[in-house]
Length: 202
Image 1 (cartoon, one colour):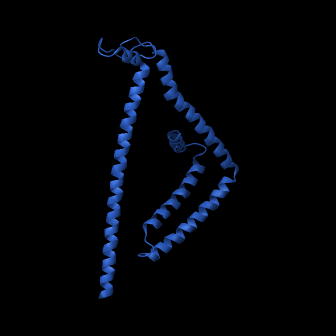
Image 2: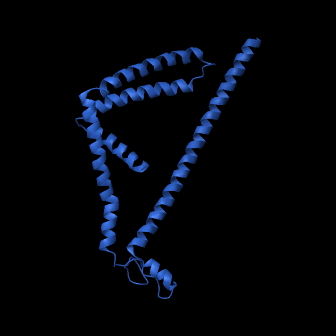
Image 3: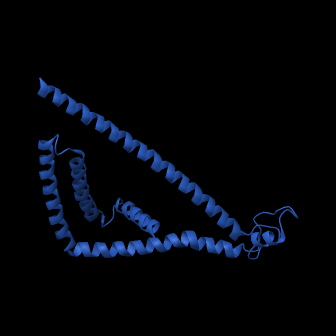
C-alpha cells in the first residue's frame, strides 16, 4: 500500500529527529543525499548552451559530490551500524504499521461490533421503500434506522471525495505556479538571447 509506505517513512523521519541512537547515522546519510540533489537541481536549471562555464563548474561539483556520497554510502552500508540500522528500521516500520492498523481499522471493527444493534439515526416511517430500509439497517440495526456500518461507509466515501478534490486543487495550483515560472524563465532566456544578438550586430 502506497499510503502505508508514505506514513511509515514520515514516522521514521519524525522518530529520527528525536535524540535517538539512530539519529546520527540517518542525518549523515540525509545530508549527503540532500547535497547531491541540490547540485543536481542547480545543474538542471542551468543551460549548457547559454551558461556553459557555470554549467561545467556545477557538473564537476556534482560529479565530485556524487562520488563522495557513493564512497561514504558504501562504507556505511558495509558497516555493522548500517546493518543494525536497517534491522531496526524494518522492525520500526512493522510496529508502526500494526499500531496504525489497530488505531484505524481495528478500532472501527470494535465500534461496529459493539454498536451493531444501535441506530445512528432514524428515517421517518414510510419515507423509504422496505428494501432500502433493510439495506440502511444492515446488518443488525432496527428497521427504519441507519446502522453504524452503513454510516461508516457513507462517511468514508465523503472523506475520500473531499480528499480527492483537495488533492486535485493542490495539483492544479502547483501546475499553474510551475507553468508561470517556466514562462518567466523562457522570457528571460529570450531577452538575454536578443541582447546578445544586438551586441553582435553592433
